[in-house]
Length: 463
Image (cartoon, rainbow, N blue to C red; front, side, top):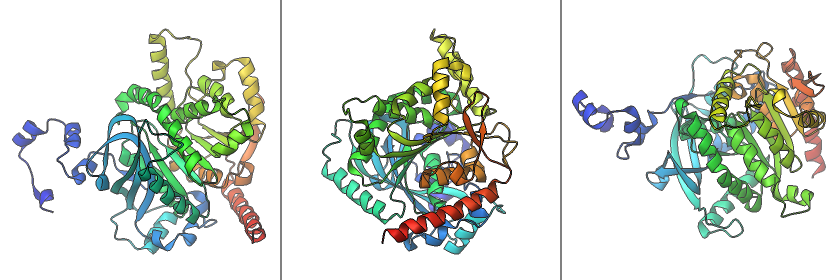
């Protein structure tokens, strides 16, 4: 391309492009230059169940999906630039929901499906595999003033097409991926896309891309943006519940995305307009909620979970007591709370790195009882026991082949920790905690075998 050969002089760069950030925001630039301003995402390691050969989701990948392009749905309240068929989403935002399809490409786009399948199943790859944004097409806008009860023609067409897509999926569920702080639209799409890829392209995945400030030094801005996005995310969940045919709506909430998720669920949980809670739960159809390295106020989360624990099927919380990112986040929240003259009895510990002294004795006792039931699972992420993890790792849900296996099984199959190969232990305060034992790979292989037999019997009985 001729544009790629043009090299502006240093003087021209200084005059018109004083900073790299400004370069990225200039609307006249081609998409290739915009993409170059974003940190590259590489394909995550293959989940253990796939690399060991116990599970091959790619054997059943639909023929039309057997290529380099991973297609996923997205919803965002970021403001767009560019044509609808080639969108780019900025850090600015409002309360409208913009929906469409994103295509994330694996590698250079030249590899055959057999090559992609092999590299996706390799436990150790010879080289990193780049994930790049191929295209973003906006299909409809659900405006702030639009009613959830009656859709515009544009929205009705989109939901109709979406439901046809769900019917083609063997899982019949929808998984919503809610990303963490300091993320561009491209990075969030690449993370969601590879989750879908490792289901053999069979899961229906929707990225919810909230307006991150896209800078590690603007974490406070991200926190404020999340708070302002809660009503919008609530409307999106209501929209899915009302107009999609999904059997269940599952949520994978990573890091700061956990705050957006738990606050939105609390809004739904505190809705008393329907006195029949079981009927209300059935209407929402919220299945598995998986909090991965959750960056949410621990004390607030306990109160919020009390409001919505009866309207979701299962909640999983992963905890790494040495999570370095959550330690920094805790100090930031603690500092801002002190400046605002808030109650200083709380350390503002994070849900993924909780300080049990942050909650009352009554709430602690209630929480412990919840872990003994079948709807709340706490998983201890011990880097000394899980291969390949550093002690302070925060990104373990996709970095660790063991943890990513657990997330895939837990979210897509909706089964408990014991059924997916985890072991049980008693916590210091008597609660039940799950962990990855040394023989996890053997245990998960047996778990997958039993699950396959179970679902084969169910499938046979349905005919």
